[in-house]
Length: 153
Ligand SMILES: Nc1ncnc2c1ncn2[C@@H]1O[C@H](COP(=O)(O)OP(=O)(O)OP(=O)(O)O)[C@@H](O)[C@H]1O
Image 1 (tube, protein in one colour):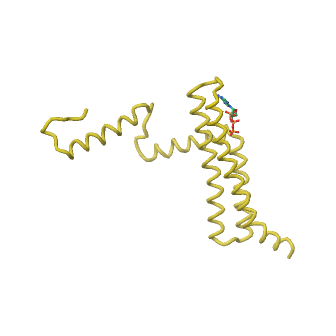
Image 2 (cartoon, protein in one colour):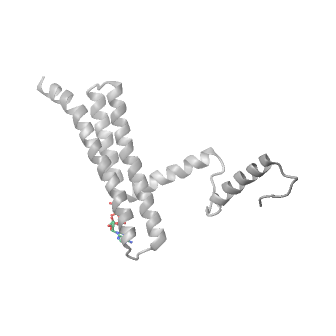
């Protein structure tokens, strides 16, 4: 409750507002991470759920691991390895967000058809596709030349 009488200073009111906003935003949560290890545990649960339930997540993980192994074998410079790691992780991150959006849409409308649900899911899947295509192009640009050199030596 925000106090409006004169015994409260401006700073007290701002502190009250901050506390109020913090608790309002958490009101809908069933459970709140109480410490850092709990936050990591919930994040790990999200990764495990995506791995088990999403075929595309597993495919991206396998391709990402192969590309990383190939890059190390080719002894790519650290800067190029960093670019590859960034693009592989971007695809996995978007796959996780896609899974999250699908779950939220299903939670909101269940098994009913809705054009907005279709748009939300299609755009979220499109984000993964665009990131996958761009990471494919980046991988080809960085890996193809040294691989060809190695194979034709
Ligand atoms: N409630 C809905 N209303 C309208 N269209 C829907 C709805 N649910 C799914 N769709 C359509 O079906 C497609 C597949 O939805 P689904 O929830 O099965 O995703 P998915 O196959 O798991 O996607 P991804 O392969 O990206 O994980 C969506 O992209 C959307 O076009």
